[in-house]
Image (cartoon, rainbow, N blue to C red; front, side, top):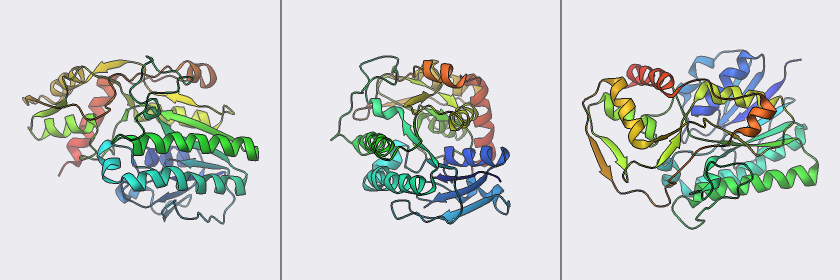
Length: 312
């Protein structure tokens, strides 16, 4: 029989690509999403597929699934600063109540549970690059605390279920990821720079642009997630690209690839914005034989092409 996977947040950027991969690998997929930040357009090409089912559902409410389930992949959550600053309470609820309900489903179905956590659990790191053993430097009462602490709580809850109920769980910490299906108004730096370049607007750089990020193309991330599903590693495990770029470097690359003549405009750095971000992926290399393959310029060309075709 085909394995069934439940993907919460399956109509979102990462979740929809994960649904694609699972369908391609012969899984039956049940996609749950309340569409606060997800979109039916991300999964429209899967409508009518016999092995795909979409259920509009808020996972902070009880999750009822009749089918046998082999995997529960909990990806539901606002993920960009613009989203979680707009929906701080919903973000906290999906990280707490939503994780509780997703774990409850996995427990009832005796399914493997994968938690999509984030590099934001490291906060503004004092250790660089960030290994999974690092506990982080997070401001729990700052503006970003709603997201950071929701994910830290979700990790603690996942480990509590693993220990108390002997469940098969894994924690995945996702670093900056980009690619097709990101929203134009996502608020994250890659779609911001691309959409601003394509429309001839100035590129918005926060602070001096010397802060660094590591950008992983969506296909590489999905490959890592799929390998992690088949692995018995409990995590936490970092998945991301260890190649580090400053925001100014990214801006110059986007301008060159788009051919835009846009200028740069500088704005104050947001509160608690991390100064450095780069994953230590030693564990993923060892356990999954995984590392990113798509270089930044190659991935940006794909993203720019997608935005060019999907910008109103």
